[in-house]
Length: 473
Ligand code: 5AD
Ligand code: SF4
Image (cartoon, rainbow, N blue to C red; front, side, top):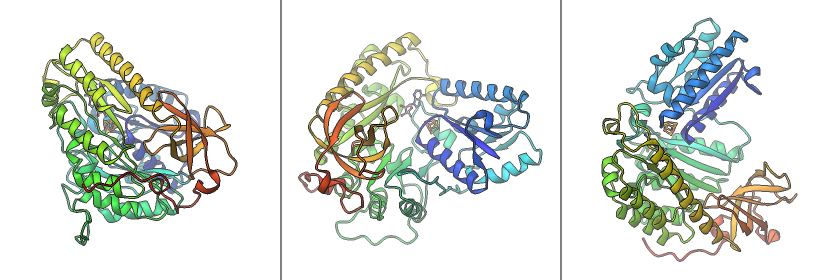
């Protein structure tokens, strides 16, 4: 059977889609080139905003209507909306063949066998009482991979539908994660991004080590730094990232791990959501603007080249012009390298849905545009500061727009484009001197290739660049 996946939403969904593709390929199915070529189309959905759900429902409707011309084609839905709406989706779109929960990737081959046998309208949702089975399967050939470490979320932010959808926090056993990373490294992967809604909560809700690890003097006591240390020690891994963060997880030990462990990139995605203490409290975020900035201060003090990205919601219930100004101030004070701005969307069943959605749509749009413009100016200024610096770039491939250029990312996760060189290969770490800076992209030239080109794992980005002063934390 030939399958096609349409994926919306965050990195969790990207990872789930990859797991599904790998599971299907292992079962002998093949990826389709396009919709017409596909026997099975799965729409991998996001529930975070109403619009994302509306679009997915529209897409599913179209795909199901297309069955008139290709009656054999199966159409399924997976991801957050599938889990959240379940049977209601089958009612709304009766031609749907399959509705799959967020922890059901492994069940797919068996479900496809049932579909092939003629069954339709299969509903396979997550069982909140079962220990999740997490697929370790990845597709071959990548240099960068996502690895889920923490499923679900226990933080009940007032606006967010995720805890209802993805269930309670569950930390995967460290042994499974390390095995998965080892396999990835053996297959040529050089960069790992550990995923979790509040990834620094790893190990807080269930035990993760088979036997309690021996704790070396000066070693890490907390589970997430310990995991970073273990993953970073796996041969072949040159870069380690993790997302998303929450200020409560930014302990001194975590910051020390980021600063001192080889391969851990000095970059954090730390959603702030608002700069107004009143709104932050209504959102139940668990920190004030000052506390957020204090955390940022500690991160920057430990890592001079630290890069920070964030999420912001505009138009949360009762957000006034003054609250919004406070957010603008925070954005400037935190100096985000990049931020994603969202217009508040009430989600059924969340505490915020019971509050009045009283910021008019036009005002939400305006506030969104103001922050986007602020962020553009800020991003350009921060990128300008990279001019003439030499950044270590992990080569990801040839630039899509211009095949004369290579594309890769800096430790701070900025996209860097540089002149194509035949001696460089995907997965190499190369020093690139920045010659031009746009708001979203840096451009540069490879420097000192003879002695600084790193085709093997012998050098780390940190070791190849001047080391920052290390104060004890
Ligand atoms: N409305 C708008 N944005 C939201 N997000 C989460 N829930 C909502 C909502 N109800 C945003 C947050 C989060 C990002 C993934 O999506 O900023 O960090
Ligand atoms: Fe990701 Fe949240 Fe969207 Fe689900 S609802 S795909 S967890 S952003």
